[in-house]
Amino acid sequence: MVLCLETRYFELGWGELQAEDTFLVTTSGFELLTQADRSTHL
Image 1 (cartoon, rainbow, N blue to C red):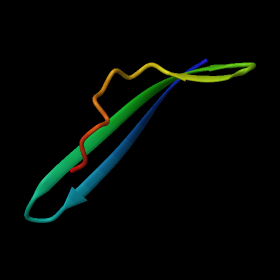
Image 2: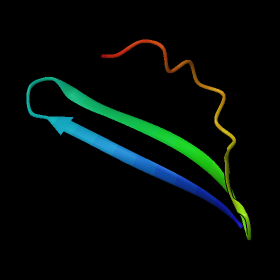
Image 3: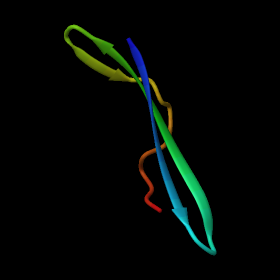
């Protein structure tokens, strides 16, 4: 099964940000399919 988790953040006067992660779920666990750089923080 493949899942896409979409997290939205909205702030009045600023705008909206949406982060998405896609996962492959198997009987033995999961694998992150998103190829985003996670070394930086907002």
